[in-house]
Image (cartoon, rainbow, N blue to C red; front, top):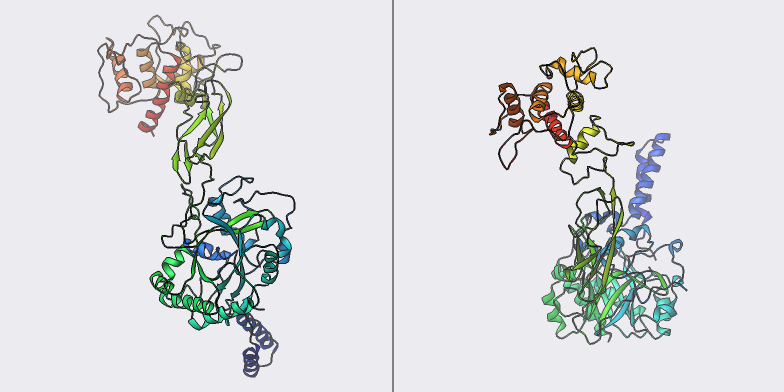
Length: 615
């Protein structure tokens, strides 16, 4: 049967009108053909369009849940999309896991599955003591893809779609093409059977038509479970006022009851609360019994990652007999998704799903660390259980030695109240720093690394792996570093010192500073390059080489040198935060020698200050 029936007569009439009113040229013939095709396509399309995967981003959570609770949608997969009958592979009783789906169903089912996964692929679903496991299926589950013997060993009942109302202009009432086969197979194996009609009725009269067709299709058939009226249509019914839709539901219920059959309503929690008038339903229920079947899955927010509580009850605080809690269940005998329901043994009853979900370790991503950098294996890590919330966890090992280069593995374990154990192995890789003796934890690391990246300093040893930060800095080394950092060129410059010749490796750097006026040497005409440089002399050379000006910081030292020129340069550096005194005494100690680590800091900060003062 079709979901729409094209009506060709108006199209023929229109075409005759077009032929009469348009001149018979080649162009006019083309126009007539194009318009004819357009009109044919327009009439072929149903007025009430189905909700399709392309519209999912526009749907609310309630609409998503409603649409995807109808056993996969209103139409079955094509024969080319059929699942192979499962013979050997075992899933236990059930598994909530992803699978290959047809494009039109993959979107939301994959998203729902991402928050419904409750067990590993071999874990058995535990059914509450007060409930039965019931599946509901339709022509989406093709009989040729089902091993009924395997499937029936794992369920307590089945609800079959007996038919549905189409969404075209005439809203055809369509029998499910596989209902008869499904009914026969499950009946032969002694499985209790119920049925549901997927409705799009928006009038009392139409609901009665749906009910009568349901009864007609059931003629001569026995049921052990009720006939359910499935209301979740997002086009016709969604536009119907709750008061009217409630009366439509009652019309279906009463028609079925008058035939002596048990009946119920299927809808999502959101639909019950927002699209039906529950007070009116319960008023009618007092004298006209019907069952309530409720669908409610985990919440899903597209594109948003957050802590999600699992759904362990339908969160429906009125009487219900059955709860559909997932559309991605898996069973032996069918290699595809199935709707799972818990049906109360002595309904109505409150059904609570058993916690089988292991806690998830969060915040324990793979890390790459610089050698020596402090690392807390617990920092930012937590264990989240979808029922218990935050739970405790352990880590092994509790610490790692980041001074040693290598790859470390940290095993995190958490156990929830139900005893479900979750674990995660985190990889931490410690990579070497540029210099083996200046680790990332060293206070001078950023300054040394800064100068190294600029090519201003190099290391010692055959491979240059040592910086030797505690070594005292010689005057010739200091001149080299200052000249390079200040961007001074010694080409063509002269340095007239009695202890320095042009073939000396440090000559051009010293000559550049002489030309800048930053170095004058000692009164005896020597430079004394191999002597260790002192704090006072270094302050003068740095201040002049970088053209530094007095800064805004107010500082004072109790041991300033007698040379007023040296005092001025010390104050220039100190007022810009480039150097400081000793905190325990408030002294500057101008005659103290400087280490390579201390000088790396002075030069790095001097570069920053110079860039601001002399842009």
